[in-house]
Image 1 (cartoon, each protein chain N blue to C red):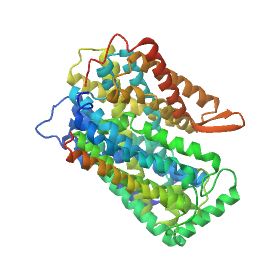
Image 2: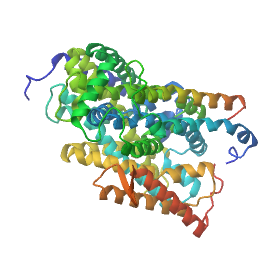
Image 3: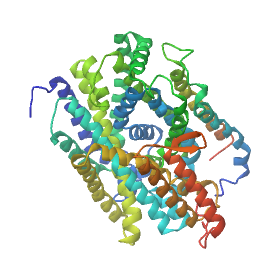
Image 4: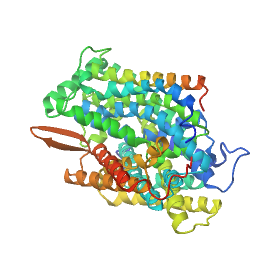
Length: 73
Length: 498
């Protein structure tokens, strides 16, 4: 429990908010439930979801790097 | 056995790779065991020495979470209903931010105290035997049908090779049981390398070659669109408005449940350090791309004009129809080996639970580390045998239904396992009451709906359909909050365990 309440954790936690982006982007279904515009033959519904795979990886990586630099662990 | 239908070149390649991983499975007992080896200790057999780095964890968790059954069932669902089956994609994306936030903390709690299972962590924090028992029981019960499902995946490809009867499946499973017994978690960890590389090759070849043969992705999607237009109902390349809420709640609920299972947690606890898990949250989504591509095989089947009696035969029929025998054999071997890895880890996870949370507290409290390893090894055999009996003597639908219920149940362990990592406010009695409410409420809804994953509420003129597991979780949390307010945290505080 001591780790959770250290001031360092508090200070860097704001970037963690980025982790909510994939949830908003993928759980708000009406936003991407359409066929156009298509890309390389893939309807929008499909390439949009595929695109969120690397995007989510990138977001997690950014949050991870940031925590490392702030001397996490 | 009728030998006329056997695809010999496919069978030959299949047996070659199966033999390869069998040898690896037996050799694995000595793998990655340096000077830190604790010898006859559950940490060695059940967690591979708690020493897996980023790469091994990546292959192990990837091989363990994206199971053979997934390779068969996701394209089958996409083939049957279209866009709705794609909830697997947001599910396996959203799981990683969740893993990133929760699992390093859980790992730390487990590592510090030498915990091997989720129920150990709960016992360590709350010192409540009933709550520990509830968490362990849920894990074991949810895992059994999951192992059975892996067997179904294996059964499908064995059938596609032209083999009949139960004997090939039995043989494959006896081999699996023996090397898991001798090498523990190291066997699936080592085999996962082979399995994952094979699956990546198969899928990359399939997603390049198949559309090239069928006229490109545009043609693949448009033939699926035409097929769904004929089929009608709640099918199509995009979702019907009534499917929005079920799609989103299934994705979210499944993502929250995914790493509550004993087999995925075993992969987490076996990691060397917390950053291994964080790095894996960054790199594991590579498997999600793969899963999305695998899901598209369901549409390719339309473009290829594949006709099947059972939706589960879509992938094997596609490979048999479009590829030479040897490559189909390679693909089927990849799927069958893909069943061995999770089946092994699942049986190890269930055995760890049995040993640490049933045997140790209730049968032999003074058990040695060596004794724990011994009990777990024997239980792993019993668990696999149980799953085999399940598949051979009970209807397939029974395993599927139970697995679906298992997902609802395992999600109810989320508050007990996770909340304590972030807030020290909940007491064990409140969490146990919440768990019970979630299990009972979730099961009741599922049975009332005829074992469907979603439940519909009617509010006035509107109806809302959502994933049953998530509704049960909401009930679980509300009950836990209320009981906590009424009873207080209880006489046994968390003692600041972590």
